[in-house]
Image (cartoon, rainbow, N blue to C red):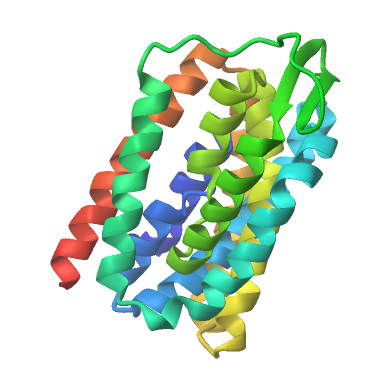
Length: 260
């Protein structure tokens, strides 16, 4: 019951900022005695159902740029499958340490007072001008696609969604408004986590008795968190994202140290 309550609370917070929260789910599940790879598989299922629940709310408020999600998430999803399938080749501690370092970088990018990139006059092959929800922004596909591919590979291995890196990419590099980035990230979280979950499950690492009760709690948390997000100021959402990502990094690093 304690684990279910923790998953519910995490789902509320993570869905508020468009993150999957696998960085938290994985160590929490491991603390119950599950292996790293079993925990990663369970976390992927939780991420899928939480993101789908949040999508219902975000879609109602038109904060999901579906075209953007479809384009930049394709390499993430493909690489997430391979990440999940080949995760067994690496130790759980190594995976967690590497991802913890990446999380610190993502957190710093969002907490550091950097100017959000605005639409410029850049055009040509690889520069995609988008107009959505009253905003205009330029997506540099030469940067976005490689980053999302690497994110997908790492996310699939560790059992997270990659939202910790996609939101800084969209907000800081592409000028996407924070609220649209959160909604769009939720769409990508669902797809990426699903591919990672399939990759893990093929190797027989799925435990229904552990995962299904947690998934039901995550659905409720995802719906509630998305409703909170719509009512929260973008500046505050950015801070919440940065601090939760930093906390996830330390949580992941501590878990790696404990299991080494």
